[in-house]
Length: 250
Image 1: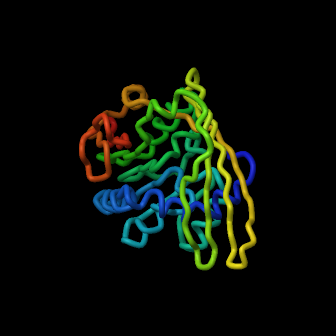
Image 2: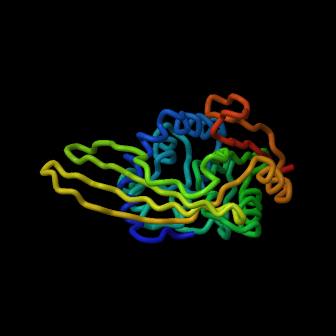
């Protein structure tokens, strides 16, 4: 599940990149609301730098986090030193506790490529749920336009951090027969003096389709309670970009 190349670049730029790219989606507000609604401890898998975990904890939710990247978790601990977070693989973990809610926000499932691993994730989730507990996760709804072949480099986002300007570019190469896209990202980090630092990282990202996820959940003993196409809880449709699942043990 690790990144290739400069993982520190991803960690360093992650919060700024996704504050610009994801804040308009409403995903942070959605997960904070669900964490508070759970009424008990919450486990976030793939918590990364804490983009969702930190505001959830600051709002009063009892948060625990798990991520495979110590580099990302160092960023989280810098923001919330008392955070209860663990280095681990979502396919194979045992925290010896149960939770009212388990979440897998954003694209963490994309780092799990094989069916056996995907089932292991959801079975681990089920084992860690308290009675009446739920799992909530989201993934992008695949856009066929991006699956037909390699996509030329594009500017994903540009944002400022003090007197530093960060520009992130990406290219993607899809492999349809295995539902995996090779993603290459590079950053131009321009200081106030005009000097530019170049960083880069690559990783393979698995994609999923709606009914594939429904079958995985069913095989893991989880029943879909709700499915949304956006974080305002509107239904999935041809133009919605998200698949947001809410499930309980069957």
